[in-house]
Length: 418
Ligand SMILES: Nc1ncnc2c1ncn2[C@@H]1O[C@H](COP(=O)(O)OP(=O)(O)OP(=O)(O)O)[C@@H](O)[C@H]1O
Ligand SMILES: [Mg+2]
Image (cartoon, rainbow, N blue to C red; front, top):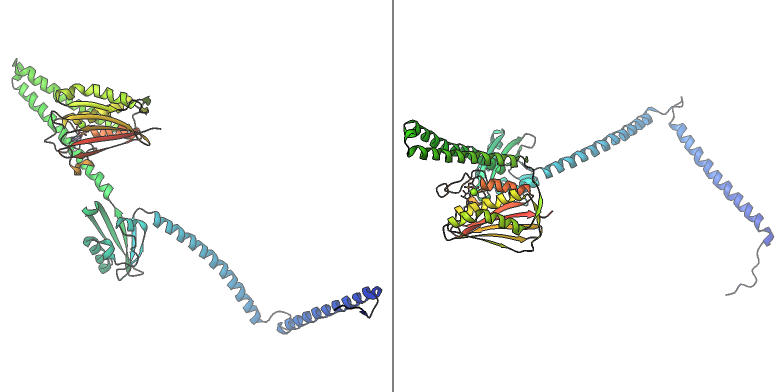
């Protein structure tokens, strides 16, 4: 549709005048609205004000209450955030703690268990389960039960042979929730160190007692007249000499060991080809091996990369290992020295076809004075492997052994390439 004859009630020149009037009317309406609202608020304020112009007591009370609520909220927010951060800190401590923490309610159900406790009891979900089910040990459960019954702290230590663990549990009564708190400590390492120390002391006294007793017997015999015997005198003196040599060697080994252990020995590192190291150790031990009726071989590629080692000390490790192989292999047996590259360094091995080592002793042979079976070990104080381990570890490497009784043993040590 087309509008052809649209008639406006004013001419285009009159338009601004009409617009100005419209604007004026609108402004007047808004002004009046504002004035009306303000008047109503003022009237209302007047109504609730007392005659002296102040607010009535009720309104003041409400105002005070509102201020109190506002400041209470502020304090509450502050406390909440402090509690939150304390809670987070506590959670981190419980998570990182190596000791286990378990909270058990009055019915014997676990309400909380930190990761260490789940690790120690080899469970992934202790929450909500019964304490008997998780501890799986009669003595530990009894300790918890005693604590519940007497309301007094109880402590129990148990050895779990199946898991090769030694655990101590302290049950503390929780007076608020009538349950208990269980603290679990893994004493396996401590116990092991205690055993090693006890063995060390008994071994060293035994090792000293034997040569000292022979020295005493020999000197007494000499004093008793053997000194003037032209044949027995020199023989006894020769034996005294040998005993003193053995004692000196033991003292030297102990000194070496304590120096290496306390990090007092400085390594003189030089680049060395693995093959050269094997050959020079083999040369030193060849005669001994031949005398024992054994074949000593070296198997090593020519192009193995060099390692930075203290040659004298690492050769001592190889000599100790070959010496053991010679001692514990029957005539006609084989001893092989090997070296090969690994992803991080060079792996050395001393292989023998000897008597082997029982599996329960494999983890202990590197301890000071440990000897598998004293009756089968001719000479030796049980320090060789311990010294070797420290030398290898001082190079940043590690040493271990594989063996089967009656079939032979392989001693490995790996030196990293840095
Ligand atoms: N190649 C081997 N075959 C069988 N048993 C071994 C072998 N090497 C070590 N052992 C066992 O490990 C024990 C510890 O060895 P280690 O070299 O520390 O002491 P040792 O040879 O008895 O004395 P030392 O080395 O101080 O003269 C030995 O007594 C032996 O029982
Ligand atoms: Mg030895």
